Image (cartoon, chains in turn blue, red):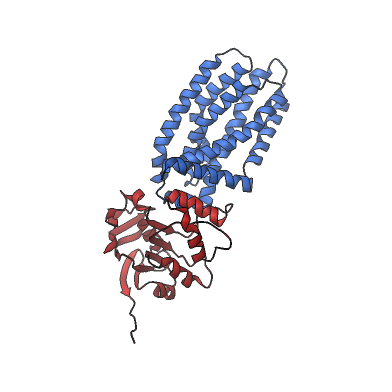
Length: 220
Length: 196
């Protein structure tokens, strides 16, 4: 069986389940709006300091939303004992992992579609294609890493604690490069092409590494 | 011809001995029931047979292949139902079957037939997986009073190892039983057929 078809089937199944239950996206979107709202009240924002404060708030909200989104990816499978049912099929564990990562990324992208306009609204920062591209590129690598560690801790008792401890250090490169790209997109000094190049490099590196590791994490 | 050959299967969970040198040979098309009290090692044995876990020691061959090294290949032909159903509640019965058909590489054209066999045709209208060797862990636990008939239909023509507490069900469905106590095999029995 074709690994691509397996990945598509897994992603379709996850998205269909989320569409019917609406467990995650509304809660995450609400969380993001609340985080931006609190930051808006917490900082003295004006037109001068908004471009330097807004990127930090954007990445903080995105990181915590991502932790919840990727943590849930395998939690639902664990609750239904369906992860084992999937792994006991001849389907490639890497394809199953890819399907889960694609679905989780798409759900996070839906949340980002709420977050970016809200950021622009609350902080008065510009919302352009360059900023969207930076956030989407960061999402790819963060999803690959987040899903891998979510799979790793899915069978562990202290998974809620372990997931951030394992994931956050490896997300730092995305936050640095993504933060730089978003700051440049908001008009602060910094090389946007260089930051985007770094994000693409990190994406390739971590997608390849997590694909190689997924087989051992899921199947062993 | 023997399709499942297990030699000296032993498994430890930490300091606890779950299986102690269990041997089992199952021929093609044979139905074998694994009996035993809670904690006797039935689930551990079945999970090892289903390639869901590796024994601490011992050797298992299924269809002449090493069950650990060739597990991906074997999973085309193995079906395992554990205590939990492993289904997605947000998806319909047909959608669940379609999803697992995709993963199993089974043609979807069999879903109707299988749904009909288990009495679910009215609620779901598509195909199902073709599994010729079944490992069933207390399959009667979530079924109604017609469990035995339903299971007999599903097991027909397949090689099956099932675990149950229900000795009557085991005797009805399986001509051969393997009894476990504290992880050890305490013997096998063959049901005698009364011939008039």
